[in-house]
Image (cartoon, rainbow, N blue to C red; front, side):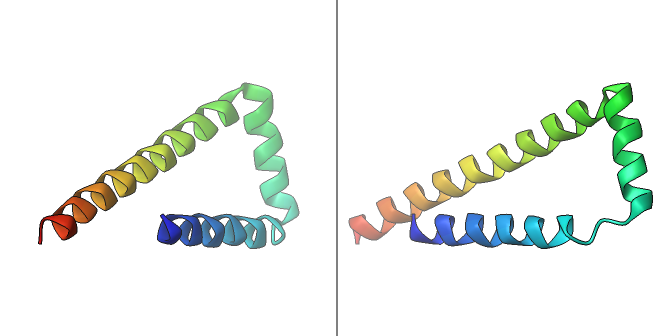
Length: 71
């Protein structure tokens, strides 16, 4: 569980550093996507992928813990 928290904190810190380097061109693209409503599709896809990865990691962690306890 500790490894998952470390992974998530590193992930969110990297998102923060990427968001600070946004140029004016990226801001106009984001405003265009927001006005068309497509930004919500992008956010939904990213959240789906992120949640899927987190669930996969939790599942793998449980299986490994079960194998360790059997030995």
